[in-house]
Length: 437
Image (cartoon, rainbow, N blue to C red; front, side, top):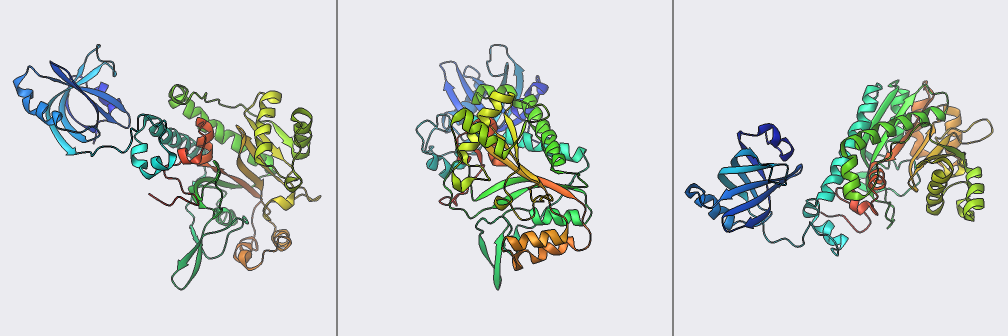
């Protein structure tokens, strides 16, 4: 098992095997300093030139290129004069495990490097400390959110991404040749989440890819993204769904702040703010009025009953000024602007919400319609027929009241770290003009 840089302190005084990248070499008159790096940090390796036994080691390191990888047998020594953690490695053996060619760009200084060049060489781009931290923060965030659901008796499921009919959202879908017929890449696991409710699973979630064939070249859209979906039964209203999402986000952000809060502030200049309950809530028509009165903004006619990007930005501003909150739930959207499976009350009012955070929608959630007759009627209103026939079958044999939501993981991470685009956030970005590497 590899010993990482952040574990070296525990091995002070011991001889160990350590593997990593050659980050830098400083060849002085009497000593050679080599900085080794892994994904947890950096450590100094010191080779004294006066010692005859080091002749072979010096020869190896004099002919190696930066970013090559090595495996060293070395003693871990405490040394207060060493700035990198007060530790140094004193090697007795060095093995070059791979040799690097000259780099196409300096990943430690990405200023002026085109984003497309960075994406072409994503494996080098990720070696940048900032980009490595993105991956670690996102992992910690999802781990904490997952753990919260496990602790609350949710079951993780895995739904198919190849499906026989186009899914429900109205967005374009990717067609895939499937033997002698056409299949589609799933836009969301929504139908299958509700199938689990009809099965009586009560509480489920999934973290998985979703696909949208939208020709959107914006900072917030991607053709493939990771979605954190959940659904749970026996709710009384969509307020129960909002309440659970508050707890989930508080759990995730609390863990990120605990583990990486200081590092995020140092590297990204962003404070991880853990919200308190309840998040402010506002009806859409009241929001329109507030945005008009405070910021002279009127929603365009084509967006009435919904939001647009400018309204979302101003909603964040309003949430901060009026409620001292980074979050805002918006309710009472027009049913015509939402999927047919969102429940409506006896007056036709939609039983759902959006959650805005830092100027962007991160969630659409709702109580779902679980009554077969109402669901079939809503689908017919939307002009949906054969495509949802299989889905409607789930509700013929009894299904408890339920609701849920989805959070775009990539967008959540982007907003958390104050990044400008999903091209920076995603491990590998997929967009209309990007299918490699």
